[in-house]
Length: 560
Image (cartoon, rainbow, N blue to C red; front, side):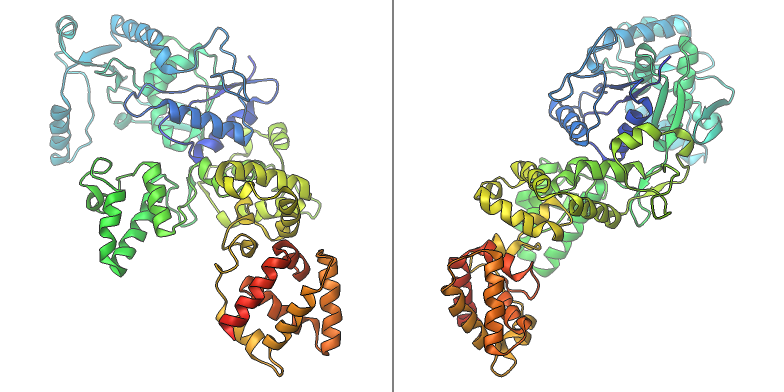
């Protein structure tokens, strides 16, 4: 059989970066001659949403991870064939058939304990200092249980074997799972939906999945799935559990990191100004968090909806950590760069570059041609944001101006619509000027970024006090005098191109008998507020003659 892999996300939010890496590896392993399937695991009706499902499809397509079969989506097509549909909520009859078969063969049974009764059993196990393990009672009466199930709410549990289970993993090797993993787990819930364990096993068989690549956090599910496969007479796919992605500090990279960062910022803000609490309470109403703001601040596990977190971050001027694909897209990373970096979080090509160093930068075609499980490591990976930024900056530096501007326009059409509406000719010149200074696409129009001076109003930027002191107030004559001379010279300049501006300032410096820097730096501070900017000619050309005149006048009035 050709290699057939799948990615099966639950539609409960945007795609986590760890899930994106799993999808990337599955896509790469399938190659052009295999099949990569996308399946939406939406049997958790309370947490799943169509909006989240659409977001995940969009995230994958932005990354360039296109499925050969799966849900129909713009940009990907989709091909149900005979193995669809690809949403689990539309496959319930298949799962019910499997459950009925397991019950009929004595491999599954109805169970009637309420959640409260199960909690009591767990407490008793803790008090007796033993692990809680649900097993079918020795005096279980199957016929009585089936009769009772006809009229009472119940779940269906799978009867696990008593002996240890062994699973061979392509990355971790052979693993033996002892009795602590052999509880009789639920395969059918009270709400009439299957659990993840049953649905994934039935779907993998029906869809011909040959290889299951997933994170190591799913490892303890594997004995359950292997037991179900044996009971249903299914073949066992090849399993490969991928290393977990951690933050740089060794903590697990989790969506809760956003709430953690927001909590810390809110607490700090309240220390500085307790009166802000009313504003924060309005942003975190009790309907969205247990006991409102106070409850969220105290509960480390509580998570706010994305829109509320974004609102808090905006109010606090806080940059939330990038955890989901959408976060990285909003932050201005290029999809090819993100895929390249994700590929290295657990896998390496084992090749050298032209300088004899380990090859690290490559495209998706390179990954797909060379990806193999024998080069996936066992150790957990650590996400290095600085390295990703370096990759992104290097790729931007290698782009030509047209490609860079096209990428920025695409980003701005989603995240900075007003900025994208600026004059096209001006944007073309500005993007060419700023490209070499950008680490991300967001840097182009970031107000505190390398080109921020060009996006703010003439009276809306601050003057760096140290730069003013060094370049304007010192000297004899002082920098203000040279600034006045520069303003007068620029006012007569007819050709407002970068080269013409540079030439006029060089001539003026000679006339004043000073080095170009002693003329250019006061001018740079005056029009940008800082002693650092792109080349002076480019900077002034981007601003235009009217804005430059206004900014020089403002500097003379406010700083002299």
